[in-house]
Image 1 (tube, rainbow, N blue to C red):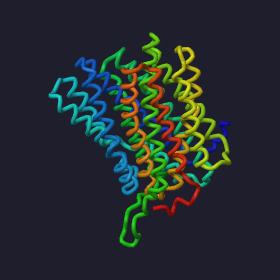
Image 2 (image 1 turned 135 degrees about the vertical axis):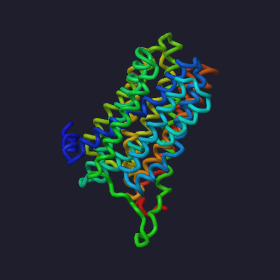
Image 3 (image 1 turned 90 degrees about the horizontal axis):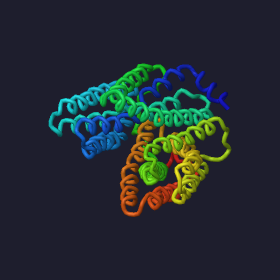
Image 4 (image 1 turned 180 degrees about the vertical axis):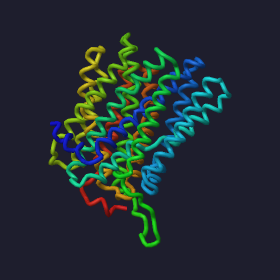
Length: 396
């Protein structure tokens, strides 16, 4: 199975830019949690900690499409290097203002600036794969590899930041996120030989290619619904663990869920699929809906673990299909921007999904709250039906 990945990483420059991108985006699973751990430890306020973390995430999501467009127009090297430099300075300022107990507005400002300049490494590395691969059949394997690495990021990052912040120093987790983000992203940005050429507009180049919104919007709605599903399932699983008297196992259960996705992502990239991307997306969303349905009826933590493991098997294949569809339908000159749209949709769905699930937990308990990810999965299924196998390149 791993021969497909071996051949992929033998492409000149591929191992170097993919590994650098992995290190560069490790911070995306560390900073939000790191802010909560630092601020709650220094101020005793989880409310302030949550608001600062939310300000960071919202600023990132709000400007993701703009940042993707800049990467396409100006080039990955310049935009990512500039972004990570400002991000690093702002994150350092946030840590300093919290440690020195400066006025409350100062860490808010630092959080917003840091979030606004989070570099789009995940979108950029997928666009780079699309550029360097001459065998289009390998693109799916490359996207599967990056999906697996995303799962690695979200399994390792929270564990590292929590251990460092609780066992060493409240600043330690964010410091590691800062260092890995800077080193990884700057190393990736410096590899200009494999980056896609910037799509600079000239008078003789004609109008900029249109974004095929009729093709993009249904996939974006799928991503939005999946984000809501993830946010709701995470909050509800934590509440379920607490109701069962095992709140400390919530992280283990979520890690098992991610591990199932990781395994499925590895298999997805190694298989030569005959079915269309649209069909795979529809099957994937239906599988995710089916995986959420039994959770409300699980009555013990030990039973929840295998159910979540099976449920995780549908995550990576579905997300891979959304990114591959984006790669297929969006003009090459706007590919990173298109990836940014999907990133924004995923992130934008998490907060309302988590909020709604939290409200249901407070009112009726965790079992009832698992209905929220089921509802989100149903929206994803319906949106996936709107994707068609037509030539999207002409859709405007």
